[in-house]
Image 1: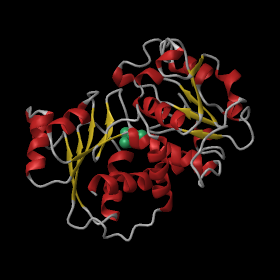
Image 2: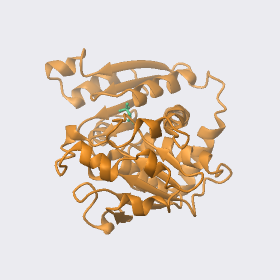
Image 3: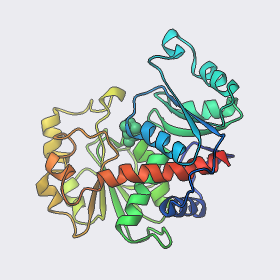
Image 4: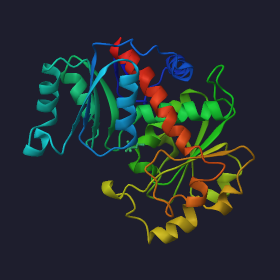
Length: 301
Ligand code: CP
């Protein structure tokens, strides 16, 4: 999970460390001046709303200074490489770089070639560790697991374009480490070909799965990464794999519907469910700020 002070991946998670981080985020006991004088740089080479804004809010809540850099409006648009950009920003005296990029492995590459802490804010189809932490905080709070962050007995379905999803990959690593059972649901081509690939059970039957899970995490089809190539139409996809009101009605009492965002209403999730009583989508967003405070605190320490 951590490589020194850098958070790059959830592929190998120390459960004790993850639980301590969730407890820190849940406690949210910051004075607001802990990291005065520290500088956090958001290097976002790919679009973002939730992750970029919440890292900024989190860093400022810890007393750090935030600088924001996006591809558009920076020298990246003139052809400057990822590494030249990172070295340039590091030379200005930055303590932590938060990196979002379209290339899988981008954050690890920058971590390898710089001395400051690096936090992966989503790299290609690879990993999105702080989204997984926000999701775990949301699940723990939804099911009263705040005392130990032990998810034994909880079953989570991740539904849709799993193969394109860095959120799914990070969630699988973290949720399984915390003790949850995970089932990946989607049409052939959108879920891994073999159960061994991610250590989860697989299903192509959402209706059959719904009654047995505590949380359903709906995923956007990542058309920008080639996802959705197997689809006849988004209408057909919604009919078979969309979270409709009827499907939300098939879930257990107390079960929750999640989505990391951005949502495509009417495709993977109906608007009435996104805004309905089972939805914890905005809790996920709020919890994103809490986990990013905890992650930055460790990265800056
Ligand atoms: N969930 C997520 O990463 O959203 P953004 O792309 O808006 O940051």
